[in-house]
Length: 323
Ligand SMILES: [Zn+2]
Image (tube, rainbow, N blue to C red; front, side):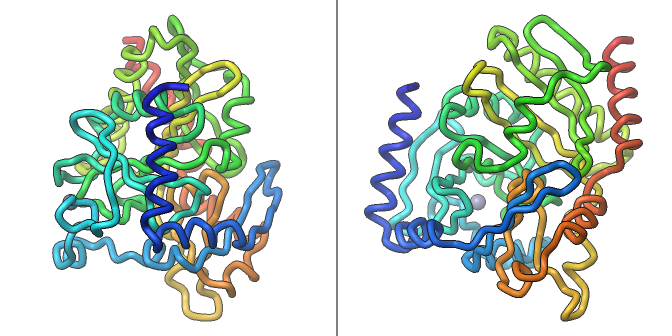
């Protein structure tokens, strides 16, 4: 075990013992209701978690953000919430409103906008250090980040998102791009469209970091937008092989139409990395009771780019890489 990982696990134990609110919330999580579905061959679990209403229903428009104190800046954090430095730019905090049995937020020390460009290297470093126990993820500023004004990653118990198992067991696609110690492919699994970067030899880490960064820049240009394209990123480690995975999930929408529908059709789910990773969070009991395979499939179809669009994006990226 890396020394950083053992320090982190001690930190978690200490914080949940010292900070009552967080300790209680982690304890309550052990009894929360969970339902399991198989949707187009994918395992999807639904967690009833009333503690997440603050995050799920968070107002992330510019006005609301500018009117509240940033909860990731050190001066506004509760006294009980301590931090553990990761490197000179990032600190690790425990998340007091957890989804995972062990759940962390990893903000930058500086109050800078949520933006992935330039931060992929830190993401991969975190996966190398902590991947034996945790997976790391990123919610884009328009795809579930509840603090789009303060750059951060999150991290939770490895293997908790059902998608991780499929991603690490899935063989490379026939049109995968292969390099020395890595491959890149595009996957549509029936629910999700994503680009998969797989580091099979850690000596190729920097090369792959550059590929991920260049894909994000390419995709922004290709999409014709000025803002960061809509995406979630999940990074995890296959504990058997040591391979490192960086998955860029290509989103077309943050919240589905049912989120804005009138009652009783309204469904309060606000898909971010964990939800699209196969663990859907419902903060309201009525939504937990009502959700079914059909609703899940329609939400995924709505919030992801299509299989055709994925293919188009990947082919254009590959041609650009070759030329
Ligand atoms: Zn801040």
